[in-house]
Picture 1 (spheres, rainbow, N blue to C red):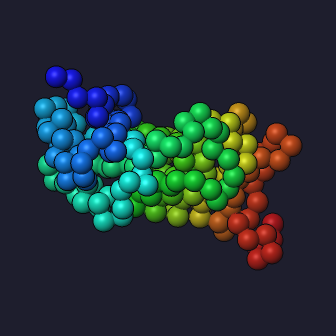
Picture 2 (picture 1 turned 90 degrees about the horizontal axis):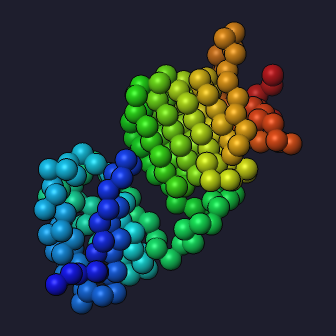
Length: 211
């Protein structure tokens, strides 16, 4: 008999598991069923990113940590993202500080592509040849030397910020800019944002740094 409490689909970004938590008697039953379903295609899922879509008000922080740990250990995924199914899927991600965020504690190397329907915070660099796509903001505690695309679903208030902003391509919402060949390496953190449909770049702390 088909069990519609868990629906799993794969795409180029990884795996998505849509879970109807309220249909299980408790968290442990849901976790057991999820692992059982994923274990069938375990060799396909190794090293993938799994997005779990569920009513997150029914899962506490401890359970999230346990679920993530079990998925890492049993299915060998590389990352687990929780997405609240109660969010409006088609709602444009707006604002600078709002919404969910994905944290990466590593450098994104050439050839790697990171996509997320929210903010992306990278503790490391974005190397030349790397690509970052965020529906929200992109914050890099390091250097941006690759391609960065913020506000990908229409958020014209998104920002891109880095300790060293030297992108190959920088795009916010529908506006794109390319760094000139003679672009001088910045000496302080900078923020890129839209103003009158143009991308402007300014010091992160305007009162502290002077052009």
